Amino acid sequence: MHHLLEQTADRHGAAAAVSYKDTTVGYAELWALASAAANGLKSLGLRREDRVGIFLEKRVETVAAIFATSTAGGVFVPINPVLKAPQVGYIINDCDIRILVTSAERFAMLSEALDDSSVEHVILVDSGEPPPKTPNYETYAWSEIVAGDPHVHRPQQAIDLDMAAILYTSGSTGKPKGVVLSHRNLIVGAESVSSYLNNGPEDVILSALPLSFDAGLSQLTTGFSVGAHVVLMNYLLPADVVRLCAKHQITGLTCVPPLWLQIADLDWPVEAARSMRYFANTGGRMPKATLDRLRGLFPNAKPYLMYGLTEAFRSTYLDPAEVDQRPDSIGKAIPNAEILVVRPDGSLCGPGEEGELVHRGALVALGYWNDPVRTAERFKPAPGSSAGWRAPEVAVWSGDAVVADKEGFLYFVGRKDEMIKTSGYRVSPTEVEEVAYGTGLVRDAVALGVDDNRLGQRIVLLATPANGSQLDPEGLVSVMRRQLPLYMVPSTVLVRGQLPRSPNGKFDRNLLKQDLNG
Image (cartoon, rainbow, N blue to C red; front, top):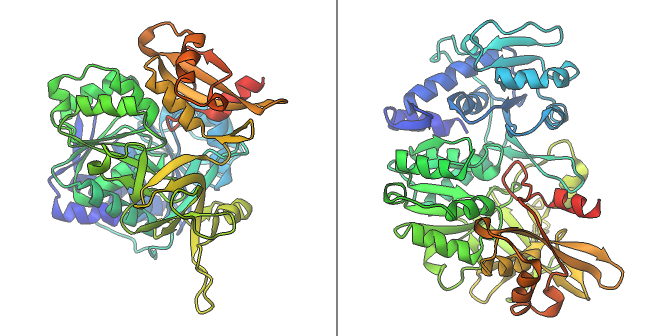
């Protein structure tokens, strides 16, 4: 993966690569920093495919550490900076991280978790003094690691099928699972996504999503593959997005629906919106009302509605030219991927028939780290790949229910494990939430199924009021009843001041379910 940076540094060395706060680093300078850090990692004894944990907010050193790990032949494990010590400790020990790159503040938080862990070396990026000595592992200042000559490379034997990264994503059992990505996965993904977004050296991309999230990491790789300028943002307030768009004249912005819902409510001055060339959505369906609002805010920008899963990085996108005709569609397969809609027996569904989305191609991940059981459940032979003359091709069986129309456009129905079964019907929570958003009465909405002796499950809608107003649950249900069949109308609306989100910015459905069941 590091060749994305190295080759762009050769072609566009003086061009801006990343900005963090008031600091901008060019491609040649960033490559020199990553190369020096790679030599430093090798000096610590980093072996091929050893894991390097990176527990940092977004900053220049974070990006350098990612590409340094790849250059040195290791596997980078970006850990979401909002996680607490127990979750970080679990990830460290689950994938046997030997080297950890972090900050002094986070190091202090992790001290107990590291004492009995796999970590042998800790690198502190902001240590102004010699870091504290510990009996269980060695500590270093970042300045020590990058002090060597960046032009002296220690050869490392790596091919494109080797492990490059492990991204941890929420698991159905409550423990996160590590999705193992190869160098090929990351490079093909960068080239594919950049091609349909038409990214180029003149683009300025705002990195608003965590780098531990596949879509967040993709903002780096897609940008670097074409020599674009990536602006690093550690999200605090929605207004920060507007401010950075104005300051850097952002041309591309990708967010998840909860963040878009907040951004769409803000006032966007002309200087913040005028440069926007495209905006993209991932991580769930964007409500039609929010999409319309964003198109009004960015009249010159193309909307890209995307679908992806960590196990395949990115799967589909909707051509902006089709948004008016089919705004509810997740589009068609991205370049260099094929998306199939499959029945439980593995045969292909016909148009209009609901089935499971199966992704095949070069973006299919290597599996779940150290978890052969869950790997076998999700990574299975592709439909029709059982020809006797070849080894079976592995595809990702997403667990997502979709429907394809006669023209091949796909429509998301829902997660199999999130589908609500009520009154003999299977109800997509997304469809209920879409109607709630369409009323204009709610800002956030999550529909859940709660066990019910009579119905099987009843639908509970958790919602926050729109624009700080009061929300009348009965009034909301009355409006929704006019737009939904009776079996899809929530039996209960629970008003909350805010709804919890996962570290990747999505609504935390598991936590909300625990709240209801408690």
